[in-house]
Image (cartoon, rainbow, N blue to C red; front, side):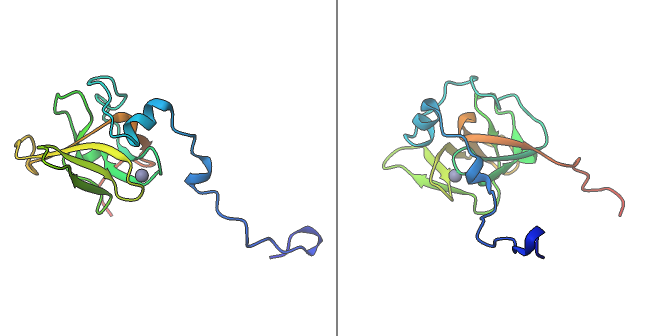
Length: 148
Ligand SMILES: [Zn+2]
């Protein structure tokens, strides 16, 4: 559709996606996300935070975890027993007992994954730095069993 004056709307203007509006990482966030750092336990904003929504990568905005999969492991970091499909990559560090987890899209460091702890039926614990995450509240109440 033509706008005033008959000039067609440009098709070359990219969508203002999340990448255009992201603020730069702080020095502390860089230390964790780009240099495999770990925030102090019980320091993160999401340790005791259980609102419904989606947790995304702080660096690139890729959705990573759902609030439904978050649980309180008492360890001082936000923990999940599942991730969104193909959102998180496990990296076996050489010789170490811990397995690093990173954002599958940008490779940003998230934390570590542990299994066999029997904390939840899925028997997995994604232990994630709050500083590696950003939270978006669910737009609507989650009502999976609502009448249709
Ligand atoms: Zn990312």
